[in-house]
Image 1: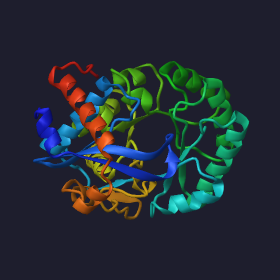
Image 2: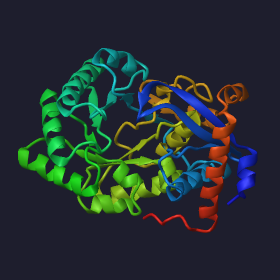
Image 3: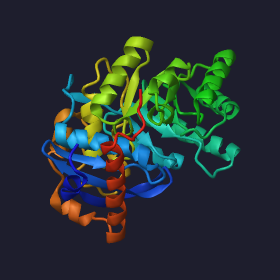
Image 4: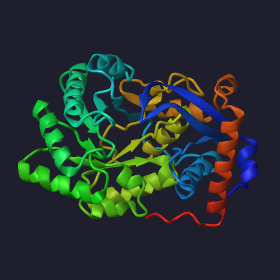
Length: 347
């Protein structure tokens, strides 16, 4: 583990505007590190405590000082990501991921009355189906917003439109996911359930699957501590439980997305498109966007970004002094936990 001041010596704190409000944010802040193996990103969300942030720092240190795990494929299939936009905007959003045959659609927008939200969700998902055309796959993501009863109602209505590849984190906790899967099975509603937050924010990510809470696991590199941890967990989930994984980003900069691509490229038997084409959510980034080709992100594109963002982009997106201080202090606190082995064990 490099010393905190060694990490900070090559650090740049950036603020990036979003095209559309996403996850309650209008802009994304991140720290970019520079190490002997290339660039890395440290960007835990503001509401995460220092113990959780320490895992994001471990992932960044691994990426910048060790580099990515060995790839077993030269490109990673990706899905288009559709925020909670109006239905008439969906086709344009999907088109930002050229060749994508899968779209993940945000549903259950916070602050919207339930009946209105469901009506908007139905319109948005229908628009995504139309944009993808015949053979396209749609998955929805509720970010844990529904109770099991609400999720059953919403997913029954959405499934009546057509197939859903899966519903990502429809309920907030493991008990809710287990309840929902039982409800859907009893009602004969064929919608697989994917766990996201319940996996990446759990001390034991495998416990979610052991509890019968998920058909699919969504894995993100930073909260799981790095690309090698993602690959190891994916292998165990497949080997021991037959549960496939989707590698996804966490509203990352181009650097964070590149690390996700390299992790997904190292996962054996990848069966689903990954949620890594999220660069289009940013109005400005720290490097030219990773270019999607025929619905996939090439590993070569990830390596280009990890070699180093453009200095002009870093300068143009530099955070104001008070935010830079906040992030540098946060990194020091996360580093102290890692150095003392005080971050909670996972798995």
